[in-house]
Length: 457
Image 1 (cartoon, rainbow, N blue to C red):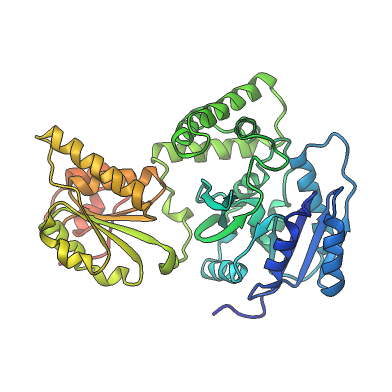
Image 2: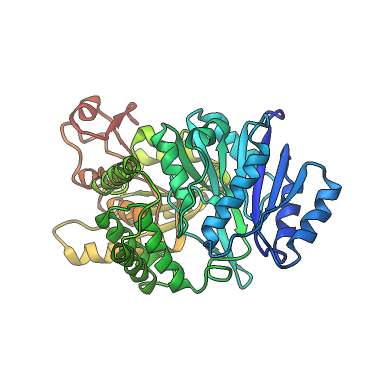
């Protein structure tokens, strides 16, 4: 359980948020761990935002209302950062453990901060963390793409030492100050991480507020990437991926590239120093060369919540499946989907969760390979697993790659029968796997990014 003596401060910038801020305030008041202080900075609102905040501040002495005069001609994103830093000036000499930033259009689950602080307690190098948010669109929640090491400013939490070391946010004309803060934290040796099992609701989705329509927003995202000195090759790969994973499909990714190129044409001076530019591009090229795999030393050390994580267990019938089943106790309590190649074991699996049969295939029969690939793609798109675990062979390999494309973590356990060399499927998956396990210590010595922790059999 989380210790009750944790002291945290929330800073909320608010600009014309009368339609949403009451939900945000009620969400904080309902938290299982209440903040020590909450500073809400009115960034020049012209609606009833001030009235609503002041009503709550009168009832709760730990809520403080501050008005900031909005500077004419200043971009929304820069003004937002100045509002946050104005709030920070009011509390920076206060004794606290964590600093939380919370937008005024967010609805929080009652245990959001308690669960975040639990993650911090498990990893002393975790400097900045958050959950993820889903957009509320026409009464339905829509998932928002998010990098594992990028924490959205709307729900960011900093360890006090981390925030002080990076000096707070850098005001950027086109936004991206949250990404910038995570990068600065990593430059200082901290870890940054967003936890997908901690979900909040964004009541004012991107495209319905101050930023305009979606294509303009994606274009601005491209300008943002230019301002953050994103490597051109990384930008192309990222934008092409977003073409198929982010609305508006195709056109949104192309708008990102257009904005990025427009930034180069403008040649506006960047707000970040040269050493940060070098750090960003080195990180990005490393991600490209490692197929987006995060180095072990930079991963978070915490354990995900079993109740919210879906696991896809994939193995061909026979020895591959037998080895996977020997680990069955490992994923007790998780939501599990089984994928195998024949229906022999379907009845046995059905009482534990969904079972999919994708069929057998091998290199000698390309049509069979294509059929299995299509069936595997349907499984991944339908189930959207958070983790794919496989012992092989070909079908497991396909599911790992497909899962990775949709953001799942991949764990590969190479068969114990592979004594002198990793399997062909394993050699392919090794470059994208978040964790690659072998059952012979000699193989771990021979191959990079491979670990040996013992044998299943």
